[in-house]
Picture: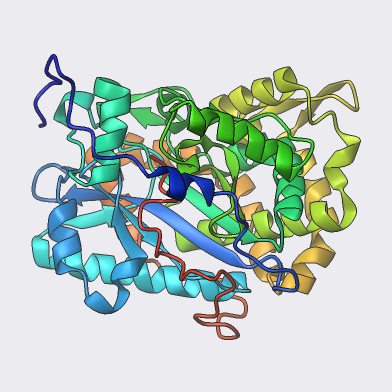
Length: 424
């Protein structure tokens, strides 16, 4: 456990230089690059099966034991019991999931040598804040310097999906429209009903827990990429935070990677669940860029988006959303059914139809219900054991996993910005 801040405050590493800040807004893609490429980031809990399946503060040991050949695919997170796995850039969901499967398997091999295990969930069901410690690396210490003891709340674990687009204007267009889909993606991905050893009654306890951080939630829309750059430049120039990756919004542009990053989703227990959500995100972004589906919705009404986000965190796939067009509540299942039909031709173009079709599994067998069922039978320790057992379960609907292994679209290798796309 780190010592509490002194009167002088915790150690804060140097911030980026002014020259580094000035280049942040250059979009990494050049016109003509392939669109809708995929990159996946997954935050994973490290657990100790010999200590009641509690969180294991072992990130330094994991990174030390990780093979050099794929060292750019793994990194620390704010808490020292969390590891982030990152794929490269792929044109297809199948290839991205295949690489993530390899990374999960490698993590399990490394952890077996340490007597530990890994699991996928939005929260650890029984972790408590006073057992948490912050990772020692500079970025995480800077977060601690900014957030103080709020940074030591229970860790949360998210799934982030990057979709490549050729320009800042295309990126901001997708960003604006994907804001309307944030509540639905949260409802489908909700996978964290337990917190501090009790059932919260929520589908995603991770969502309000992460809300303790600043600059989270659904951001406002921007009229152009230039307007977005000017807004962020103001915050940077006034010293609000060191760089734009400290904007922990539910969806955000990532100029340095040439992507729009969807960040609202809970980490998933199985690769199948992850694959279906990644396919949905990729297909939705293509739908929005090609057809402007969300233009018919009142996407600029923050009270509607915020209310639906809360309902999604509370009720998951059973939520009834405020529909600003219909003027009445509409169930998540009905919205998903309509969007799956709209997304189907785009999924076909992107070669992810099989994964998109499996989204129905998240409606039939949602994560919160599954976790509660296991916990009622086996207790919370048994639940974490089950999460660990499912971590490397084989993918049932792999799609085309061979067409683009390792192909990149961004000038920088994915993973070169080791902490740049971290959730914290």
